[in-house]
Length: 481
Image (cartoon, rainbow, N blue to C red; front, side):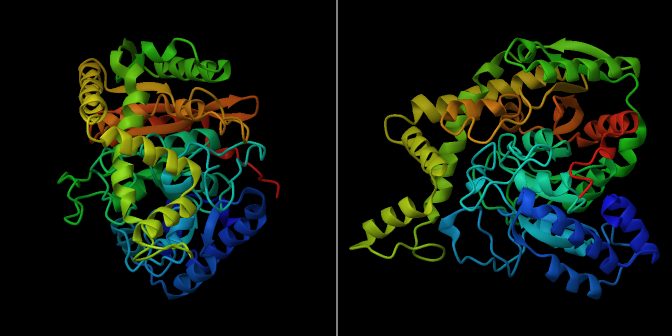
């Protein structure tokens, strides 16, 4: 069963000639056929196309991901294939170019096995807002996988791919990673090029990976990170050897616990799992210290002004004129725009466009958007102060385990609050990782570690240590299929 191998094990064996890329692909394709009908992780499966690529692949030593299947969230452009963003409005759109991360994956020998389902335009925390279908949590098919990168998390959880890419604007990698029991890393803003990622909120969006093993996260981060002149927000920072850095151990490192995050609202099983995790860290020789993020209570309100405002601006390009869906019945240009958008966008996207347009409108800009940007600065300063005392900050990833379908769709505020521990990390532009730290009532619980800017290496050290201690990756949902 090659689908049980990690990405690093696959790449090593393929480079040595011990495994053929075709054999690897066929095994993951078989796993996809076993699981996909039940979980529905992919909008556009590409296994058959990947099989042709596998046959053409000539593995070499400079291919760190030789023969490794990778699933891609469907808001990242892959040349020659649809990019839907799980929205009707991009109907018929086929990307004419590869995103920078896709170019880098191809050079590294990766095989792209499909475009994964998501909340429409990455707006959601449950993958219930896809225009096509709901993706299901493999641990309990009655529950959501999280969002917006739900398909990417599920593909890795069920092992139809050992690696996937998602995007994270307010928790869209970490929250589904927590719900699905996998590792999800949101890199520092600017660490990974956003060129070719369909924009939601440009000052918050960041591409990042999912995997079951820390070494796989480290491996793909070495491939996709680094400066890109085509992305004006890309940082000219050296990319460390994450695969070496992660092995340095965590003894003596200082871990901050946010006092505001432990005060009520936490599901009991989530709180217990985090407390047990912190005890293990202490046993290993870490120093646990309380830190304060006093402005974190404003993070959700701040985020839901900034993100919709930027979305309102970014989504203005979808007008039915140049590409994508166009209404069939209109009298003039204004009607073409309004009907196309009304028919093409789903309710959550419309809600956020309306909020953002209002926040940016004359007379309200200073009261809402400008004030939110000032609060954002205060949130970032809270982190700067906390990191004077500690090396990383540990929090729950989410306040609850995966909730049931329909449980929060009628109450947008309840849905937004599922990102309460993750949005502040995006507002501050910091790296954050969710790792599986336990189970509550048979459902995975994720713990979030937040690092200093461009210090993903420290987060991977904790993840690697915990993986060795807990061996969480050995539990596979739907393994018996």
